[in-house]
Length: 248
Image (cartoon, rainbow, N blue to C red):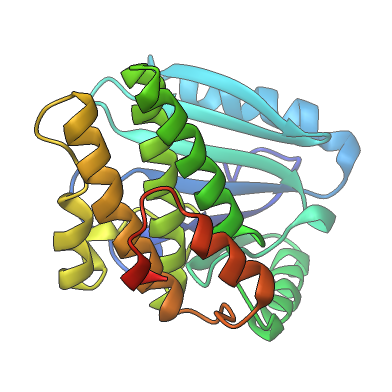
């Protein structure tokens, strides 16, 4: 890719910057172009570069002038290659490294964006209304259990789990952007979280799982920066369909 004339720089992203976790890790790259007018042709040339290796390539447009190529090699090695103008570069994680820079502009832009990233008071914000959204999903779950609609109820249970994970990861100051290293979370949290999966799919088991998850979520909220004395928060907690009075 360094030989492609329109490419101004290459940035490595993700765990590979500090050492790949294992042989199953993928390779994340950002390909930088000097201008927006070069993005389409650069994307086509990068596509051809990978296609020479008999790879399967899925192309996506992330937004205007930003593309993503998801590449699977014959040995299942995966590349995620974004093509973006240098002016639109941003930093969403400390795990990045400039590996090629024709002009020095890519490095300068990334260092500027990294400084902005580090100055954010909250680098990885959880959804503002996480307590309400958890509660709203719990209300839907409760209704669908009463209707014996177990598939939708399980979807809501998983949504509630996701909010709990997000909040716990932020409590532990984990990198939330594309975060997957859940095994690094607090071991007691992991143990209780895994107990929220019912061993059978029926109304009683799903409801029991929801009660455990509700307890875990409230524990996680109490350890967060969320103001538990806020009137709206207190009213929402009092309405949780799977709460006991002692939890609120």
